[in-house]
Length: 224
Image (tube, rainbow, N blue to C red):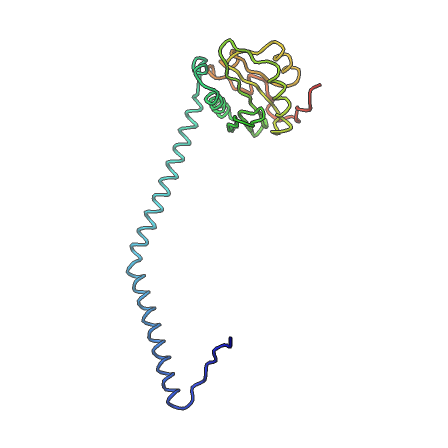
């Protein structure tokens, strides 16, 4: 398809008509511009008011979020949980409670527990002490956690989760073999008595199990 070619005006009459059209276009453009400017001049107070309202709403949301974070920090600072409260929890609630206790002790934490968690229910990262993996075992009061749990945590804490330390926490007890194996291979354990000292009395976890202030090289190199 050939392009449209614009023919130059010929003669005085065509030049006069072209000039009239050009002047009309300029006048129309000027009127449109004036109308747009007038509309903007009329609307700017409303626009400014809307911007001020939006800014005030955003500032209010920011202040409310900051106040909520302060309240949460204060609540966690005072957090105490009794053994009876632990016993009444389900598995999920137990995991969230351990997460909150870690946050109270200065360990930014998140819950991982669920299908495919690879022996990590809670993972926490401390700026000086490094990463810790927590395996939560909620059980009846007389229930005991065996060595198999220790093996599982040992096998994934370092290689899978990049953790320097691992701890298994239960509201029940551990078998003697589990405690011995954990002590030998660097898997910390928190039984009912230690849980009470941590959660109810207020002892910090890193003090309770003797974690150093500065991170050491990864300890999970396989069982000896």
